[in-house]
Length: 192
Image (cartoon, rainbow, N blue to C red; front, side, top):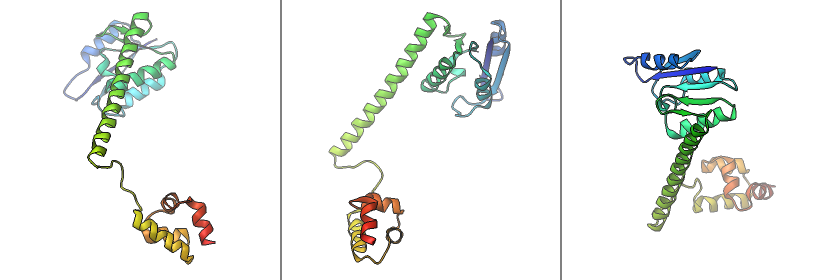
């Protein structure tokens, strides 16, 4: 079965062009949505994906009507492929029921993967450059060296439990256990 998805971003736009094109190719059912493509949750798209079954073909007027980004589009395409649902875009001429259509969609997937890898490389390069300037990335430590020494001294005194020490230092017990050399076992052994 051919099933269609039509989306416009705002209420002052209409779906007529998309509906006409989807009906012309034989879509038996069309889900219609007015929502920004940047929205993570689109109820009609979710309903369509829930209703689609193996052997169906999801038809869109243009790919940008379906995915909010190349990465999102590839995720949807991968999900459809796993579920044996084809994808067809009328404007771009992509039809994953054909060899050429699967090839083009694979190229889009390769571009999305390259984009992810470039982003990772840039992040790593930025962190390395910051480290070279003496800056340290990440979240600040909950217990600095002074607080760790204070916790060890309180543990050595043996008057407070690990939970009580953590409370005095303003951290969760799990943070204390993770920070003290020897972990939770060391805290429990010292308190016993």
